[in-house]
Length: 192
Image (cartoon, rainbow, N blue to C red; front, side, top):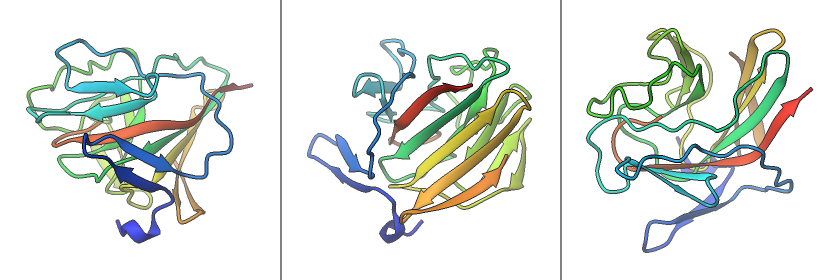
């Protein structure tokens, strides 16, 4: 991804803390990331809104889950802000059932979200993944991108979009190697 087309302006300090300005005017937040075990390859920050995957080094796939269950008959909207360069096996934004074991592949480099019938994902490479099947989907995303998800639990339909240079790209509808940071942006609970 060409960083010059980024929607966000991101900078890192000497401790590798990333701060981004992405035109946020509305700061609603009803969701957070689940606390990770002490020995986890996931470090939370910013009141559980920021995530640093593999802060020291990577030995496998690291993933995080949101705290709010998605209820049938409601609609949800959330955005994920990419705060660092994206590289490695895969970086995926998506959804999954409670049956997805986030630690099952902590010693392997695989695409976790979308790897089985219990999860659906949108890869930074621009494809969607479900049941370990990939298909072309939309634009790629990288540092400074905002990936949005609108999930309609009435119909089971979802829309994912990316924001680049102030424009939106809509499409219908984890992290592998190295250090990668993302954060919630304008997370809204249910839209009923």
